[in-house]
Image (cartoon, rainbow, N blue to C red; front, top):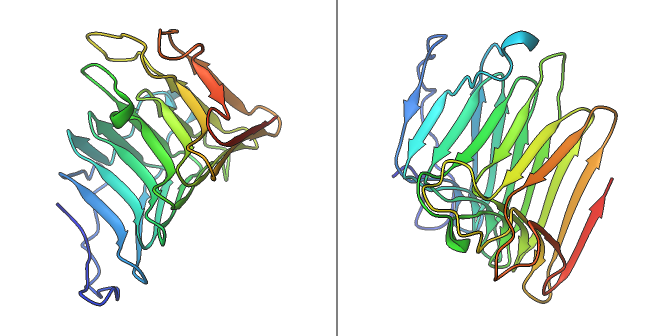
Length: 239
């Protein structure tokens, strides 16, 4: 596991990491960014990006197998992805958890973010944005001519017992699905769930020319639709 901790919640200083080669990759097990009240952590995944003709080829700089990644675990955490990529395979992705947790993820020009499963999807494996009293924000927004994309093939809950926001802006692309890479898809979880648990809220916004927010998946007995808004709390969608 990778986590910067301090017994009193203060951030830890560390020497600058060595520069990665153009094909540099990092593989890790469970990781947390911003752990503990008062702590601050930042991870930058940077690269040169790809041309439009090669934009759909994943330029993964970080690949995590069966690993969990938390951004803002009772502290303040930031994850910036630009011209590179992050792939989580069968691992839970959480942004903003705990009453003092504040997590922010920016998928910028040429950046790719993907969550995938190779087994059956359950609610516990869905991407969580704002949970357990925390605040989480994911922003998908091109900052130059390079395309970017966020793919939540594990499904995504925005505002699950916390305050969550998913912004897809100015030509950004995002996909929420509950069925990709699964050997058994029972569709017991929705692809996109906004505003779960009383007393909290979730907001999803898709704004700007060329912006795409695609929701795909199966309906199941437990949920009436692949996308659900305000099931037990306040949920809203802005287009």
